[in-house]
Structures are given as structure tokens and as C-alpha cells.
Image: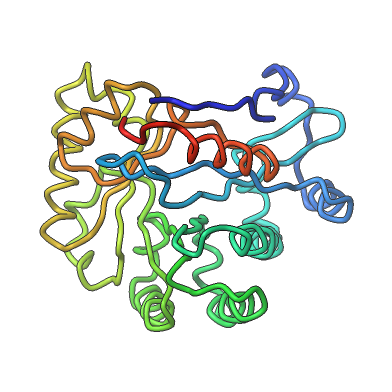
Length: 278
């Protein structure tokens, strides 16, 4: 089953607009001051049952001249200028307000930059926002890249340990290709591994991709960690991943990233559908 909704991702302008867009500290400051950044949501689905288990928050820049821009257009600059902290706080604040309205069993996932894992205020910021919005930390999944976890493993393990102790769930993104090179993965407090969309979209045609997915799921199972696949675009991929033992998935097959209003409409339609089976 696929219930989709048109999102403003469909309004992204042609690629030539990227050539004219200047992204620097000044333009990002202007965008922040004028509330041009918005959070979009993509549902995450339990593959065996078809039920919605949560949403991932995805940041978008609604540029008045160049249209909706994806994170690749501004995240690297924000990390270099230090503005990533402001963007991360925006995602937390906006996302927590949104999930406060939803069924308390639904989770909210967000990406944490490698720059933010070095910020000793990250734990306090998340704890404060959970208290302010009455959010159980267990509903929040913080996704870190493999790079973020390994750049400074001692500090990362300390921060991740604090977050885990405070009830947050931790995921590792950027994936499926390097997990076997992470001998300390089991003690880094992660509760889920995300299978990268590059593997998902080629799993039916590439034996290498399929083997990578199988090995990732096997590793996760051995550590008691859940797996979630991103970039699912059709029924074959959804069924194939389910049969391989992947628990959760997200992608255009279920829904594109949507703004809050469209997300709530999508969720209502999905919940009203006669069957949740994929």
C-alpha cells in the first residue's frame, strides 16, 4: 500500500538556481532572522505491520528567490560558521512542538551534526526542551553519522552515554558501508542503524548492495539494535527489506517529506485506510 502526498519538495527549482545561490554566514543569518528555515516530516513505517512508528524531521530552506533548498545547500556552511547550533535548536524546538500533538507512542528522529556532538550544551538543550514540551526523551531518536561517532571517540562515547542515560534513543546514520569497521559499535550506546538509500535503491540489481544490507542487519541483530532503511521507493524494495529482516523503513513509496499540515492530513488518511499491510 502506498499513500503519498505532494510536498513542497516538489517545488524545488531547477538545478541552475543552485549556481546563483550564495550561501555564507550573512545569507544564513538573514534566513534565520526571516524565518526561512522550515521543518518537514517523513513518516517511518513498521515494515511487518505497515503501522506508522514515527517521523524524521528534515530541514528545508524556503528561499524567497531560489525556492526550497535541501540541506546539501547549507549544512556544510552552517558547520563552518558555527550556525549549525542555531539550526539544530530550531529543529529541536519545531519538532518537539509537532510531536507533542501526536500519539505519545510515535517517535521523532533528527540528525545531529558532528559539530554539535562536541557541544557540551547539547545534553542540557535536549533535556530542557523535553521538559518544556512535555516530551518523553524515549520518543526522541538522535541520529549521528559514523564520522561524528569516530572523530573523537572518547568524547563521543561520553556525550552519547549521557544522552542514553537521560532516556534518548540513539541512531547511526550514513550508512551500511562501514559498520563492520566499528568494533566499538556495541558500546557506543546506539539503538538503531539506518541503512543508506544508495543501498536500498540498488538492492534489486546489485548483489554487493544486497550483501551489504544483509550484513548490516545481521550485525544489528547480533547487537540487539533495530534497523531502519531509507529511500524506499517501491513495493519490491519494501517487501524485500521486510523479508531480509529490516524492521522499519521510510521513503517516497510511503510519503515524501511534508510540512506539518500535510503530515497531519497524511497521517489521518493512513490511519483510516482499510489495511496497514505493505
